[in-house]
Length: 135
Image 1 (tube, rainbow, N blue to C red):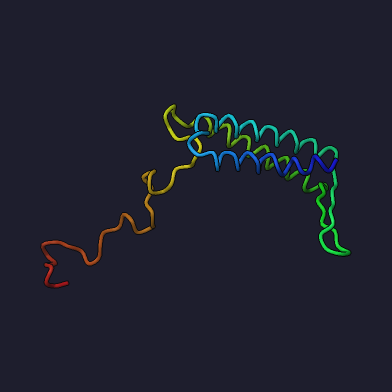
Image 2: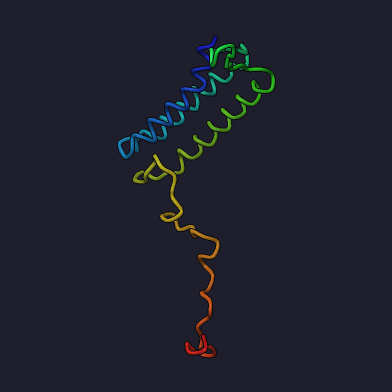
């Protein structure tokens, strides 16, 4: 059952690495791959919540590192996987045909202000009542 734990970690990590390193080559397949990975992760999460697997490996001499699914983590892993699937399925339908689907928009390209003061007037104000020589 320890394979289930490692798959639960490696499936989303591997899909994220493929999409992150793939660049523009993965633009068309990014939504499908992300939703498929999230669906596989949800299936692994449900299987992990039912079977409650444990795994451990030696870390240092006399000390072991371990992974386990207990009662709380069983609920949380299914909840996180279900929310991730819902968000990815919703966002897959939000992109247009010619948009870059593999990346989220950056603040500089999406029209959002880059700082809280981006839309404020410059100081000191320039007006007929305040000539430049008074500044």
